[in-house]
Length: 115
Length: 111
Image (cartoon, rainbow over all chains, first blue to last red; front, side, top):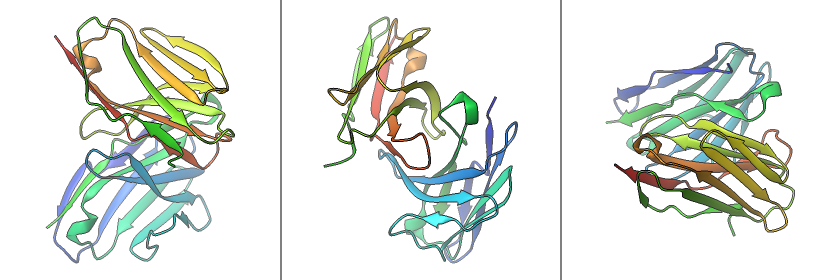
């Protein structure tokens, strides 16, 4: 139980375009979704926290106009990387609290390459 | 000082060995402790979840928490090549929004 489905698993886009990443909770309701970025051989860095029905909370140094987060329903949160640049190339992962079972479940990640 | 410190390795062991992975932390408010396994190009997978101090065992995996020393460990018994992955520790103060990851330890189990 407590599965988060993340799509796409990998994407290549041209510089200047926008990319949307979706995370869906399949068998539970995710009122909160965390979005992380992970560079090679580094740990996960929290970018923002989205809450269903309210504005996302961004970590210091993360541009909210560049990384648009929408949490439109209890089962869907999206991250849109706008006007992507090569330095945005990274592994993006979402995560949601597992509720009564404890801990957090992660999506499978999206590898973004901006060329 | 980082909130969570974890030796990145890499760690290489023969199949069947007992593996010990460790993290130290500085925030005495941390109460929830997690270990994740991450295969290359995949999202982290929760292995163990513990609250406060003590031990928790699940199959070949044992998690230990020593809050007095601010030290947590993950032991893997009878390690298998399929255990080869990066292991991340994570912890939070209230199991709520903010939790902190170690940098991960890369483990290779050699057949």
